[in-house]
Image (cartoon, rainbow, N blue to C red; front, top):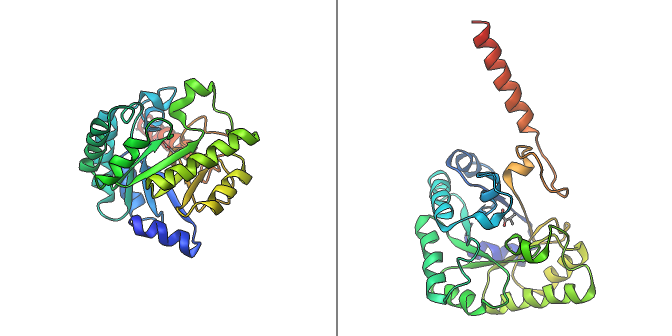
Amino acid sequence: MNINDFYNFKKGKERFSMITCYDYTFARIIAEADIDCVLVGDSLAMVMYGYGSTIKATMDMMKMHTRAVKNGIKNKKMIIADMPFMSFRTDKYTAAKNASDLVMAGADAVKLEGVDGHEDVVEYIIKSGIPVMGHLGLTPQYIKLFGGYSIRGRDKKAAQKIMNDALRLERLGCFSIVIECVPEILASEITKKIKIPTIGIGSGKETDGQVLVLQDMLGLFPDPPSFVKQYLNLSNDVKLALNRYTKEIKGR
Ligand code: KIV
């Protein structure tokens, strides 16, 4: 899959899947699965490092994990890497250097949250040749400003603002937009209105694609958000395997 496939999915009304990945071992499995594209999300700060929010992700972390994922994925899937907190709230040259560092680490595109105040950065990164995925709704890097992880765009004014931001990101040249935790009706209206694909998470089933955090859907992370559909309960299986191993050792 490359950037043109995103547009083709939208044109052909075909839905697509994105999954987060942060390491080589899972990347090798994903490379052989039917998943369409891979996100090295800044959620790694929580999932891989145990921090309470994504704002602890750094450029060094993002580069290191993008390299590991690229080593496992090779050229089998498109890789999108998150630009971490504040790495694009700079002058456009510094932001583009950060984006290009992620590309050098193995990303095919970068994702960044919000749009207010960094329109010039989005435009400059795209004009430098790096595809940008937007991210609206519950943007976790703004968690201190939002005061919690609740649904965004509930009232008319807030919904209109998210719609306007989506149109703005499209005008700036983004190739797709993640829409996180907004009412299904809003996600559906945005999806119908913009020409680039939307990728939903906790925003209902009407978006062009869906994304989940790998460890959440596999049942590996202890407290997944309530909207997550778990496809396995792997933490249980891992515990059972570890206990069996220990029992065999103790029994010689
Ligand atoms: O960092 C992340 O994992 C994300 C997705 C959940 C959309 O941004």
